[in-house]
Image: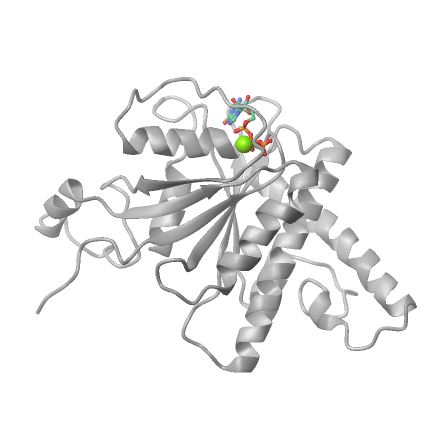
Length: 274
Ligand code: GTP
Ligand code: MG
């Protein structure tokens, strides 16, 4: 029988996250790796004001969901090295004033698309783990992530109603970046801090809605419940089906064997979406 090895249409991934988290640095690194440009140029970036798209090649060593069981002798491996699996990545500006008009509206648009070619496969939410110990950065990051997850929750609940079970939920990778810095929080505490802060945000929102006399507000509350229990990513997965993985890495340390895992674990996450 005939099995297709080459890229399944073109899958789209969206880079979101607050300003300074490292989205453009990651975007440029993956782009440079794809075009086999110098492997270790220091990425000079500046605050982004517009969105940018690039087609990125998944390194042949990274398994995908459809080929993870292949053996090393599989002849398709050679084919993959010659013709790597590609995906489209979109970098967005994270500045607070541009989120509504760029990141969040891109997410709304792309997550609604039914075309296989423009369909959104996953969201990569980049976080500066060295900044999260400051309250203001934590609040800013968590409120952006809250808004992203709420959009995905609404999509998931709507899909359930229209019984169009064809497309699956859009998963979120929280890329816990800058693990090379000694002030960086480990991914486990990043997860806990974000969950706790999102919990605060949704409790405030839930109370606001109830005080305003709104009924049937569960869909507007992240986790699709009354917001009285504690929020966790596990709750979101159980109640809504949207998964969130928090995985550490560092754009700066890619290709240095002695330090960190660079961006490989994120590429593995992308591979599992393909
Ligand atoms: P906006 O475009 O404003 O939304 O920000 P951004 O998310 O695109 O951030 P950007 O990629 O411009 O990175 C901000 C700064 O963080 C830059 O100076 C990067 O060099 C630096 N940076 C990115 N990744 C890492 C990392 O893994 N470790 C360290 N130490 N610095 C990093
Ligand atoms: Mg940028």
